[in-house]
Length: 588
Image (cartoon, rainbow, N blue to C red; front, side, top):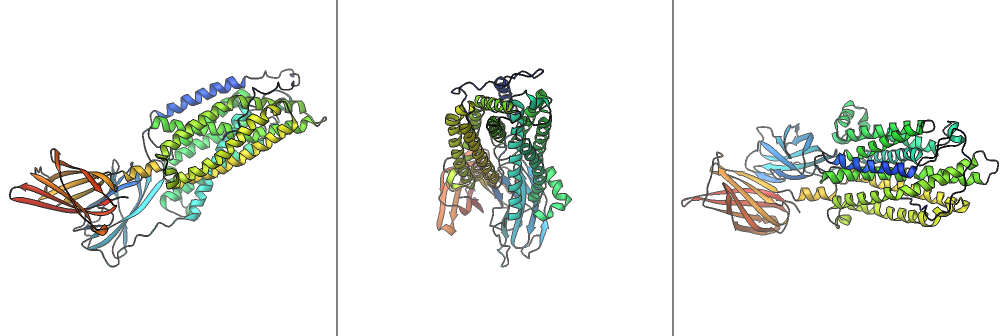
């Protein structure tokens, strides 16, 4: 996203009106913004260093497996996620349709759900809903049967999308992006790139801030969006509809989520930017300081949570999100006030009686020149950081067209390509004549910037959809989670882990013990895997001892996903053999 202009090819700007007595000297905007740019880069990598690595949570494995047939009721159901999660709601639906709320304990990435005692035969469904470290709720339903599948077994249907809630969350996210990037970025432009001096500054009426009304409106929209986003986050966590926003527990859930940290930093950025706009006429140095703090708060807000900022390696990803956010703000936040300055300067230049015409023309060309000098550096970092984030999030090129996340990114790229075309046109065709205050070129440049702003708003709308699409890296992480099964008999027990837990080449790791958890040293172990639903007869492989009680089978290929039957034959002695049977769920 960029409007890049080139000052090097431009003729000198028309002479400005003589400096009035007491007017402040013109600051070196390029040098000052260079220092700000360096500070931003340093801060970006500083915030990435101490952070822990998290990903968008996804369920990798369940024991018992989804759809498993069990001889007796298990005491717990263990759900293994790709990252630590916090349970929101856990509900067990019995064969007769009754349900009860369950509790769970988290051990690293394993959520151990305590099942009730006295469970009879039939099919049960566990409905689970958790929140991941990046602040997004994740849910699903797993079924298992005890003894036999009941005729009236709970049916697992596709999750019903609450479209009013989803649209409201998208709208709040879209409005927050607009408020942050256009509002805070506009405050930075007003404080750092608009030349000071002249009657417009001395009268302290605020007329020196171009598009002040627009920038104030964007900041106000951002504040409203923060309040709405907090309540909607709570509703999403609890699975409540939009109509339930009046309930206090929804707001408590929102305040207790990690996303509340992002919203708090965003609110600080908006408030500080508003103060910067208010004082820029009288206290320009203070306005610069405040706008720089607001810009840093904006970057910290978006780096605090979300898909990209929670990926590994953290020193790169959090820093990348921070840099991407602040460079977007500096660039796109400058568009509307710059267009207003250009329009005002050209219009008044040809009105001989218009008051302040010399000041307006001088300030328009001065702001354009400052913008032309510094914005390529910001845009370069924007492209580099955005490309890095895209590569890590996608994982592989095919994810662009095979996943929802990738398709959203393709839509963003399409809009960006048009935006960059406009930016190149502005920089190489319209900037130099506009700096010479040629009316036609300056007017065309102002209109082109308006088109860029519309494209930026469209990109905000597209990017807000990412709230509902897990990145491919998270999907791959869940897919590569090992599949595991625990088999327990009076004579022997075994933990069998299949890595990775999806169809294709795999390795099986086997840990065996006696039925009372004592050491067991069998002479031989043979593993057999079959999938009768797919017509695959047992695939038998001997296991190789690799350590105390641990055996491994290499070179296995499971051609299809689904429920696989596991049979383990243990030759305990020349006269004793134990057979352990179970099931493991292999992902596509």
